[in-house]
Image (cartoon, rainbow, N blue to C red):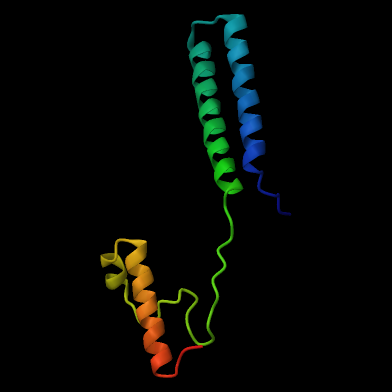
Length: 114
């Protein structure tokens, strides 16, 4: 039996509610012993989990699947014949775009391109 992974928003809500309830418990009871320290640490932990979950939910919201047109017989990346060392030396998007155009031009000149 598989349990579905909880959504980042649900995690954030649950962690925030837990942090608020722990904080309320600390304020009402006012304990200054080992239990109070443990509750304070749990409160901080829950607040951190809530913050990270909110950040994850924001990243999920802005994510769009990348759709790139593929040519039959070529890898999905479109940079056929370029090794990893060459890609590491290219530091900007403009340089990678120029490399792609050069390879496309070479393929169409020999009749290999789409």
